[in-house]
Length: 104
Image: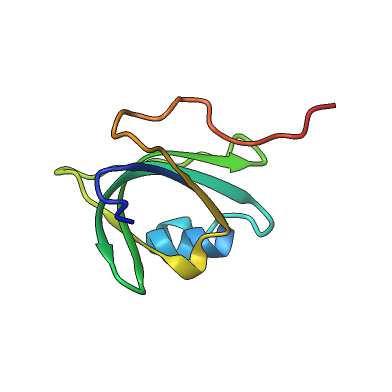
């Protein structure tokens, strides 16, 4: 199954975020969980996917992340940093509020 052109959302911890985005996230607190949404631009078999990231959210909420790249760039997301992932079957943008929560 090819993910190229599809939208994905995945979850990782602060260590995974540092390995994806590099030294700009050295201050990311231990224990934080991150959700990342983007469009898959390419796949590298057995290594990971190249994702043009469009949104990043953190738990606890409120950790600021600024994404800047002109022109648009794709980040290599190695399979071994992903804790969980969803993908949308069509190529339309995913819903803005994506995630899973326990209901009381």
